[in-house]
Length: 331
Image (cartoon, rainbow, N blue to C red):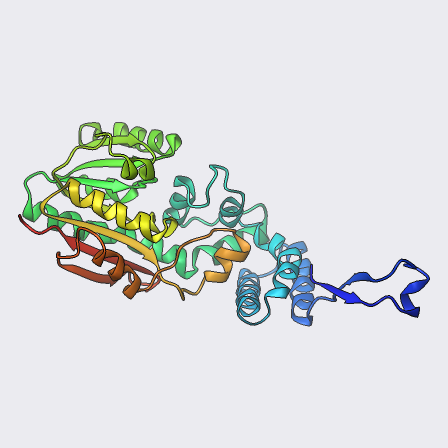
């Protein structure tokens, strides 16, 4: 909590004769009001969901204003208001990171499922609000983008090989299996994520079309030991390079370029710098991302082996996540 220094004078000398001491600053009136309202709303099971959703949005917007104008107040926000938001099952998982990182396969699957849960009536309402935020909506939107990518690959290649980097639950793959004759290779560092998709593939009798690689993509990029062969039609990643430094993104692009067939395509997603939930991710969920603009993504492409290749920028329907796509030139 923000501390205020008070010089050791006659007001403090009797209690602290050794010199100066610190006292806690009073919370801003908005924080105090939001905290008091939450105490009431969570205790009354009859509180309308719409009232709790409105409270969530005001708490969210308060954090965003603090991040912009008064970062010293963020700690008080975390102490007074964050515990109420963490009654949401989704936000709690993001915050606790049971797999060791925020965007694990089940967290992503929760966004796909869009089925609000929580520890009580208040928590379920918070979950409903959270699932309707721009970032979870963007995650659901991007799932549909892969359909266009695979369709185009099928038009260009016979039984194309498609590689998903940081595949997570790979829900988009199972959407597409009945509609296209593509073969998929799913790469993820998380053994539980790999087991999850292997079981899904077995249950839908698609194990022959879904290969898995449990591996650290950073290590694969920095030292290619041949775990992934070449001549693939498509590479894509929806939420991977948000965690990578610029130099590693360039190395990743070079690795993909070497593994693509001529005419093959790569599609990489990255959250943009000014998306509406920036403060929520950073200060409430401790979910750090490297946010990049269109210009920054195109600059990285220009420093890679794709520099002479056609590159396009786009976004999912929410406008929260950017996507850069490149085609490997023939020859």
